[in-house]
Image 1 (tube, helix red, strand yellow):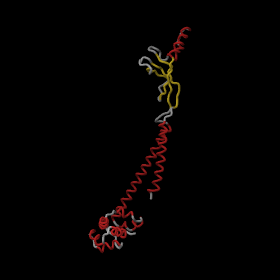
Image 2 (cartoon, one colour):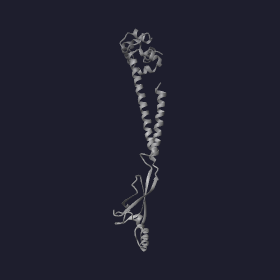
Image 3 (cartoon, rainbow, N blue to C red):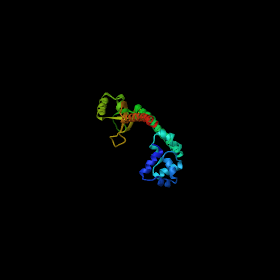
Image 4 (cartoon, helix red, strand yellow):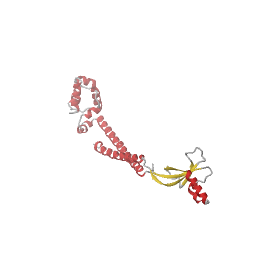
Length: 239
């Protein structure tokens, strides 16, 4: 099918005669006959008038033909050439935007996976501290740990053992940060700030934090999604 044949079909579908259409376009009927038989190629102005009279768009017309016909024949019309140039430019813009988005996905996937894998942002190592008991006002902060080193008489040691046994009330804290070998804070069980606890570091523990797994999964998802999107671009946009 040619341009003239297509537009002739549209005229017939609208039940319009050549004379009526030629008058609406402002041209001679003989010239319209040449156009419909492809003995002449319309100028931009005539083509616009032709399409307007048939109430169709240039985009619709170009979509009806094989690309070789559009490039070899219709592109000789300035408005068609301008349209095709704009389409090519738009195509390249879309490709650049698509590739930029894919590149950003891949670039973002690497730090996300790295942060989740190395646990830098959300550390899973925690520090365990144990307090033997509550310190009363005036007690030495290291009373529970060092009382045996104090110089007591034998009877006093026995009494002190009984006293310490009564006062033993262990408590454990798991903290994300290292607060040193020991620290003393108000006892959380008491409403009086003068009652305190001294906590001693007893070792490190591992705490599983789901957010690190989520970061790794998200990183992998973005990486795979970016690579697949690039493959899609190569397959479809490059045509």
